[in-house]
Structure formats: structure tokens, C-alpha cells
Image (cartoon, rainbow, N blue to C red; front, top):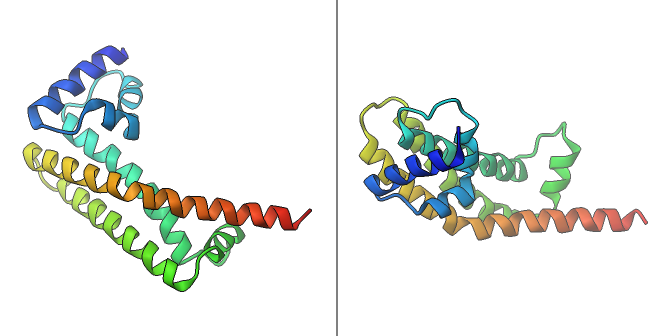
Length: 156
């Protein structure tokens, strides 16, 4: 499907439900590319946007969870976790909890139909919260990367 068609249809949904700007949603969620790969657009575009937002949030939940409760069989996540002390892990937990709440709310929409307005409100609120948390998530990731750089430097 042509990206221009996808953008046009997304814009209609965004305007109808007063969602965040297409540029902002697409920048974070890559909606246009994802939907352009399909043969046809989803019947419920609001649900498609919500599901994509939830996928992105879930990737951060998995990352932060592994820092707090690392899999003992993974040397990588155990080393990632070593970059943080207990107090820092408590702060990571707070970020993860906010993200987890969003994903659980999103799951609830799977059991409902014809709730596009509520779903749109969820998208707007969750996207705003995600963007608020994103600098903290970036900082957490930067700390892990710095930790690995120190590990590499120690090998020289």
C-alpha cells in the first residue's frame, strides 16, 4: 500500500479522535511504514495504533524488567543489571510500573468492541506519558551502554 494513502487515512483518524499529531506518532511508532507493508488497512485504525504503541512500550518493559530481575542464565542481562545499585533499580521499577499499567489497560481493550473514543483517549494519555518517560528510559539505556564500554576498556 502506498505511504501517502496510509498517511491520509491515519490523518482522518487523528482528526476524528483528536490524537497526537501524525508526525509525532509516526516518529515514535513508525506507523506509516508498518501499515504500508499491509495489503489493506485495518478496519479499526484506532486499535492498530493502540496495539503498536503497546508493542513499543512492551519492549521497554522487557528491558527494564531484565535490569531488576535478570535471568540467571543470561550473562548479558546479568551484566546489564550490575550497572545499577538497589536504589537505582527502585527508580527503574517505578518507570517500569508506569509502563506496565499502560500495557494492562491496553489489554483490556481487546475484550471490548466499539470503544474507539475510549481507546483514542487511552492512546493520547499513554503516548503523552510514554514521551514523558522516554528521557528516563534513554538515561537507563545510556548507563547500560557506559557499563559495557567500561567492561570493554578493562579487556585492553
